[in-house]
Image 1: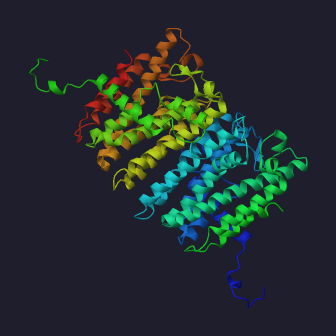
Image 2 (image 1 turned 45 degrees about the horizontal axis):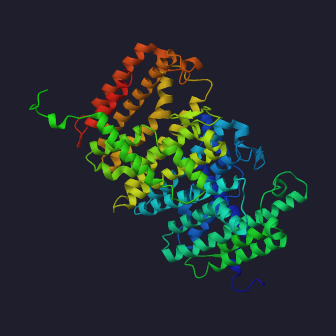
Image 3 (image 1 turned 120 degrees about the horizontal axis):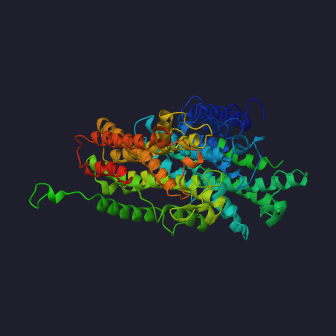
Length: 304
Length: 304
């Protein structure tokens, strides 16, 4: 593309976008759970340890991008985005517990329970989950006329996180029987990771005042992106296993994954088709859809 | 009192009141978490196992009584009351975990983790906590103009349950250092049990549309009742220990309690004074205050 080509000024750099949004979210998370707040000091420290620092912030970035794509003021939705990350952070703390995945490391650091003890990690997860609901309410009180939307966000977050979403996905995941076929594996991931991604996107759309038709488009996008992300995670796990590292290696543990069920190439084709589906859903949005489209593409870029 | 004495028709029977309200709450809890809902079937069963059946329903009864005392339509606040019980139920499931109190029994039945396994108990607690936020939102959508109040309830529930409330109380409770004096013990209980009781009462008052002055009265009531309840719990624990049963027996485990710190009679005097403080706060309310006053009295009645 030459310098005078049309559209060059709006050339979109995903890596710049992700890095800028990540920084803003990081700051907003720090404000949402300040070190100087009350309560038991070790509890607060364990919560902050699990929430801040590393992390791709994929879900809250989706919230902001969905708000933007629906023509909303994304910067005003930072609290909404943080709510999703609080839920994600709690889920990692509890997933890592000895009774669950018994992980020793998380994002290159000791897992919360290895650093603060198991009891404190349970409590830190509980408190992060509880605190998540403060944030839509805070957004709802920051300007008049938002209470109704804030309440809908609360419901979206509960649907994504609870018995109708992520926690049921976890329950299926620890189930020894495991998914019988690709359809059941899809269902598992739609709950385990898809439901919260769906909530993240829909909460951003609601912050922008999206109507039902617009919300449907964004929901289709979220469903496809969430599944694509998971398929690629499974593919990357095979690669990690091949290099002999002991992290990941789902297949070695006999876990049902997309590559195990449909082969590596089948899984790659599936991921590509899901990304196309996601991008197709972004047709004719009131705001810029480039970030959402680029994020969808990025899910398969990771497999390179 | 003779049959023609004034007020005889309105003679208040607390046991009848508690039993009727408990039944209504039980039914509302069953509706709020139906057996026929979606998600992982074992997860839903573990949630229902932990939520339904036994239980005094002390907190949700307080929510309804506070709503009534503030002149509100208490029957319409059942969902609000249930939200508090969902949070209480989750806290019991997680408290009983091996890494916490390692309890084998709860309300005369195997603790959730003994029946469904530790991983499922962690998830059931998480899902109960998440589902709690659906209920104020459901109340908020059941009639127009309620969204603002529903959002305030969400904030009350988070303040009572999370790092500013119950979970911090738990963190102090597992802290080996323990409270140094009666003041620190008060602080511990204000967080561990008081904060959720306060939320229960305030949510009921908000459901009734209470203004700040009225809310302050109810908050004073809640603070005194919550602490009285805990002091009497400690007294009852001494009695249980004296009869040689191994349940309770905080003192035997070297735990700091009111009887340990101020003696049995000192603790009894403290409980009586707290109940008086609670009843005094109920002066000049717009609705019937008898239930709240009787519940306050009941906290020390248990020690007989």
